[in-house]
Amino acid sequence: MYNAARRIIQFNNGNTHMKKLLLISLSALLLSGCADKKQYEETVLEQMQLEKDIKDYKLSPERMAKCVVDTTSGKMPGIFALDPKRLTAYRNYTKMLTLSSSKDPKKTLEELRTDFGSAQDLAEAHSNYTESQMDCLAALIGESEEPTKDEK
Image (cartoon, rainbow, N blue to C red; front, side, top):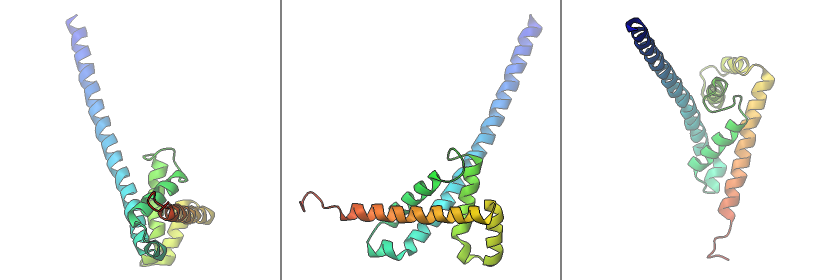
């Protein structure tokens, strides 16, 4: 009886150790995943702050960036936000958006083709970003032009 109780305690202690290890591993994944998405969000915001149409229509670069990130994310690989495929996509999209500021754009473009899987996949990602940007721009302009209750 004593040995059986001792084995249960040892098993539970081992189980606790595994839970702690799993928790630490999951925390590391979450932190790195959040960092990849955060970097993508910051890069999109920087792009939106430079966008002439956003300035001309007096739109919020922050709202525009959030819309673009949300819209592009919906068409990225991966099922959920912390899916490894989605995290890779966030890194690749960030790299794609910073291509013009790269020290060696030609080399970076080749890396992007490899990172995305092919030149076609890179083109589709760029199209996803551009379409999302245009959709968000149209939506935010539409919202800003809606008459308020006072104007009706």
